[in-house]
Length: 264
Image 1 (tube, one colour):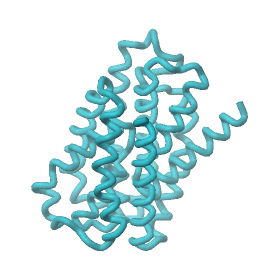
Image 2 (tube, one colour):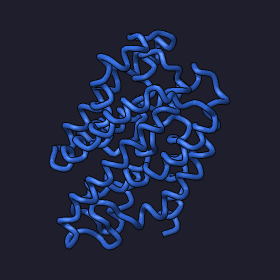
Image 3 (cartoon, rainbow, N blue to C red):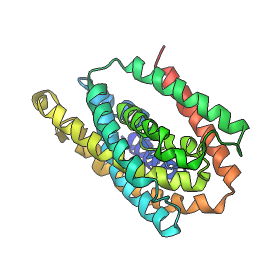
């Protein structure tokens, strides 16, 4: 039991650091952590949905902490937030409903392909961009819908925005800060969907569940992730753009590798 508690604390802390420093929302750590923890408590039925739903609710709290810290640093690009936020919200709603009944391998493949193309490019072409900044508000508007859809489908926050925004010339540090806002916008509607959809299966779900969200896990992990997200958000501004970009790309490759493991 002590080992389980330690793993939970360390995983929640790492999730908060990843969320604050890289704008990833923390789901990249929480999803595999919950896949490990829940079966230890005999949770197997609806496991995928409980894991993602619970991770998304934790991301809500983590993102609030991260957004507040980045806001104080002045890193958020508020010109992007209204349009991209609305499209992330719509994409997250669609993605959450879609993912509940879709084969997990399909979701993993979509994530791997879309992310590896961008991450590998940015790793070796740090200073280059593909599009003009103004196209964020024109042809680029399909992108935030897709990002919201993919992120809500696999329980991630808005971290995929960091590298995508960089392709439009948004500095990486501002991308991290803005991605934290998108993580909150993604997690809120997606969490609501997982609660509503799981409400019909309450008799089959574990105690302390609200729909597909396990409130016990949220109560244990969310406070820790919030503390470390707030701390790590300040670290972003102590590193150079290149350093933040490199770490973001390396983490992106790790996430794709992690997603690939579930295919075999």
